[in-house]
Length: 290
Length: 291
Image (cartoon, rainbow over all chains, first blue to last red):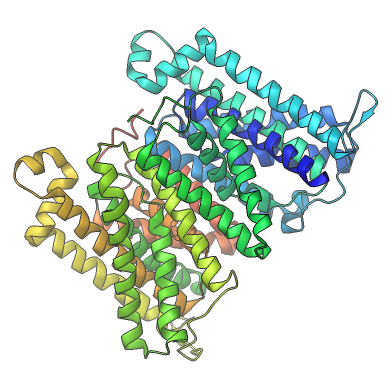
């Protein structure tokens, strides 16, 4: 039972990540592979605040989201002048720089040793402790993210984002300041990813840089694409599939190391197959220009 | 100080070689073939397989490893990328497919060889010779030599052979090249073969000099991409210049800031160039990198 609830928490965290990335990758067409870095910024900010200063959970979450949004402005600066795969390469660079900070700024992050002893979230007198309570909390966060992203997507603002995705020059010709829209979408997406990071840190109670690598970014983008980029339920389905499918491997009785490799091989193959036969994903409509 | 400079130059020639292999494939195809990093890593492990497992002598093992890396790279092009290209997919879809391929191939290495660091221990640890007041191993000298020869050969090939001319034609305008009767698929196949062979060669030189891990490919690939962007897409001398700049910057950075920031330095240079001069030193301006 505990195990099932743990899977549900992971599904919730990854749903938050993939839905928030979809705002950028699916609706705006900006394929970022720096999402795990923003996820990490949230985790590190709230973990450090909680462990060093005893800051309450919600303060940590808000601080993490603020830091991620501010860093996203810095990342936007070089990235948003670029298009298509050059944008991907630029976000790759940002991901590597931020990971390097997590891993090497020893004085602050303790580097590869990680930060242990992160306290459980406390808010309004409610201490979130049992697995079941964490499922509730992640469900609230995932639901909140879903609402934010889908209400942006259906708003006039979201329409401009889709216009940028389809034809940025045309959107500019219609008098839209596309840079403003892209920077905003990037900041919202980064802040939401950071909130998932805070929750992850307080749930696992220990974080180290290995949770925020570029491979994690590739996993999240795979969820968005396999589910269906730029669609409402696509990223949710992608997160559910990619979290639960590999868990089934556990029941095959494989050694843990092999199971971890096999899990990645499965999503790698899924990604390739999707690109070959269904680039719009399981339920999506947008196929990256195809 | 001398040691840092010499090491920086040696790394620079290695990065240049990797960047050349990346550039050969990127120039005609115009998409980032991330799985190239996995071809590179597999190249080193093919070397491990033939040197350590099969105990072939080095003169036989290395060409075999390079050949196997070539077959792998060409296999990816023929089985995955070519069908995708025929359906008129965008570079972004090709990039995503290559990310998936990268993940699969890297994990296959982990499953088959384990995550531990492996060595090509065929050559006894050399003492190193003194050069301009720095210690250099024979393998490092070999690396520089191979890199210089590879650059010269590729530059000559692009300039003087008909295949080189076709490749430049495809790079500058694939549609026009096709109209003029150039078999673009053949040219791209050749680019994959040559690029994968150079990647396999570079990987084995690195494995002989240092070691190998399943994840070595991603860093090599991205360093190659950065060196290519810094030097200029499609420019052979630019690529060498880019590699040398990265190597020197990394080692001087290690000297002043500490070795832990070496990776970050590469990406800071990338971001800097993308901001200020996205076409690199010697490249032509790209629409994708335009304002």
